[in-house]
Length: 225
Image (cartoon, rainbow, N blue to C red; front, side, top):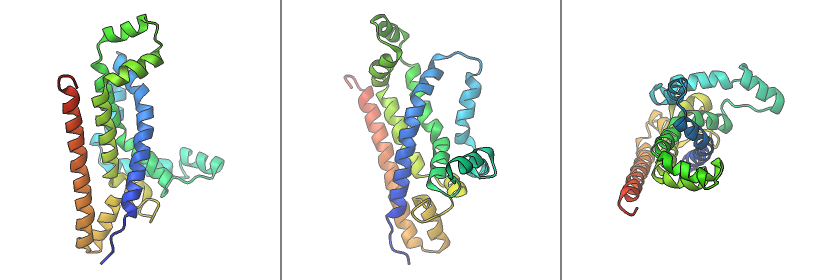
């Protein structure tokens, strides 16, 4: 019988927090670009970004494992230039998590930006606001529900990752052994009691996350919200 260990949860939340911050910073300009463009390549880009939603996590994890290994160009470059290993490290898991959770951040932001009236943007430009000022003071405040949805769902999705993390990071105590992997190992050890505790915590966390998303979205959509 194993004792309850908070480390996998702390590691999961740390991974989810950094992933969410990085994806938000990267997704905002890309979502704005995609929401405004009518390029023929737009469906291709959107399909490519959305692949992690439909791909089995082990498939994505396998190719990321190959790409990040020191035998691949990217991994070899990082190893030679910075002596950085990405396979079975927190940094490698972080990169994999960002790729895996990317569409969960980008799609809500893009959807929200596409609903902003063009006249509102034109008015901002007429008043002498730059594109950056328009983004910060008009666009982002106008898509608060989309931002909240993207941030919360991305965080929760990253906490629940299993296949991609296991393929790229394995299970290294304090480095890559997140909560979902800890549950898998507990089941393998037939320690169902501790596995129940870990699982119930993640169920409760997921339910609270969804409740927050729905409550906040209803509040912002309500008159005067």
